[in-house]
Amino acid sequence: MNADKSASTMDIEMLKARIRHWGTELGFQQVGFADTDLAETERRLDQWLADGHHGDMDWMARHGRKRTRPAELVPGTRSIIVLRMDYLPADATPVEALLNQPEKACISRYAIGRDYHKTLRGRLKKLAQMIEDEIGPFGYRVFTDSAPVMEKPLAAKAGLGWIGKHTNLLNRHAGSWFFLGEIYTDVEFEPDSAVSDHCGSCRKCIDVCPTGAITAPYQLDARRCISYLTIELQGSIPLQFREAIGNRVYGCDDCQAVCPWNRYAQFSGEDDFQPREDLDAGSLVDLFGWDEKTFLARTEGTAIRRIGFERWLRNLAVGLGNAPTSAEVVAALQSRRDHPSPIVREHVEWALSRHARPD
View (spheres, rainbow, N blue to C red):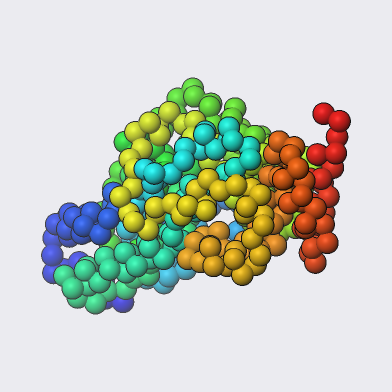
């Protein structure tokens, strides 16, 4: 790594200004700079893990201290460049509208277009190359929701926003509908100033959570979170949460949808994030009728594909169990009663039992 050369060939503040400009050219809405001190984050993470709030996400406890000590993950790291990119597409059906149509599948808005990992990673690499063209070879690695990286605390340190009571990052000019990306670098930048918390006395995100996953301000029990239950959890969804899940078949945006700061959110102009028709407001019955080949084809290049066909059917079965009773819904569920997966069969039987009740 050659940090000395990069720092000595140009005034560091001028370089920061150029990086911000290049970031904007590449489609990012904000660029910030953070140091590597995550001591307070490490303490909070340790307590969260000790409380078991990570559920089956064992990967949160792996890698030793690499998650909270950037220089142990990427030796030589002295600063982190943090960037945000808005993702909410203007043409997407609003979350509130989908939740009022229980026969439709409500998929988290970040997942209805192209997989953001691919989009952001490519842009981050281009930015790193632009920096290299300016200052010469330097040490870096790019990340976006990948590897043991504490994205939100780093973004907060870089002045991109504050971590709200729902534990998402909030920006007073852009809300929370955005992705984050990072460049770990051996160039030592002066860190930007963190911004203050502007949640005040508001508790809308806490009150709206269907499963009570936000157990207190700034505290999330992932085991109760619909995003965890429909994406990360590999086994059966606990009975106590199935009704509350409603028609949310991949993730949950409720806490973002009610946040007052999202009145300032900007729509994304990125083609990659434009919604695919089947995924924006698809019929639960139609999606449940896909075979695995169709699932793989229709979700190619999206974040949804990572859960696999079995969990896709599991989630849709729960949605159908919560849908209004109709011959079409019952017939769709009955068509999967003999599915090879015991998990799918279990959730199908639960759903059918919901439609067999007198009420």
